Picture 1 (spheres, rainbow, N blue to C red):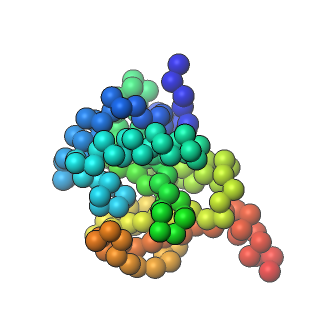
Picture 2: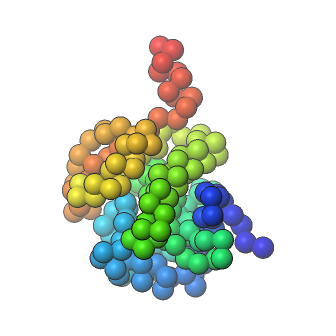
Amino acid sequence: MQTIFLECGSVRLVPFSLADINLVRDLHSDPYGNRCTELSTDCSAVDAAELVKSSLQNQADLGFAKWKAVSDDGDFLGWAGFTPVSETSEISMNYCLPNDVLERDPGLPKRLVGALIGWFFKNTYFSHLIAIVRTDNRDVREVVKEAGFYHRESKVIEGMQADVFQMLSPSMQSYLMSA
């Protein structure tokens, strides 16, 4: 039986396996189907193996990672989850879904991001979560803003112009509201 980390309606987030490298490579090879929020180096077809391997390592080390998104039937839909940001020791939430999945279910990104936020703050002790969004990705920008993230800064990350959005944990929000 496969571990399910998160269920979001008919979408399940499950661990990657090395056999998934070609699925990720194909997803990242489609320039029109790559609704990716991750840093540019992790969203190229060349880096598919690294994405899968680092996800497996992060899961073992941290208890969370990027996970494979699958349908009830087990069909590959993309990926979603979390990535450590080495330069700041923060955790970034990210996802990558192809356009055909978004056309069938336009509300999926909002539901998925909401479920990821809930899972993260329930299962970790981090004070905040970030989302790094390419400046040209308006769709993802709207999703994270509607989920409650606020713009923290704009910067170049690994050669990519990006906006960093942040959300405080519920306990940190309560603390700040009481101050």
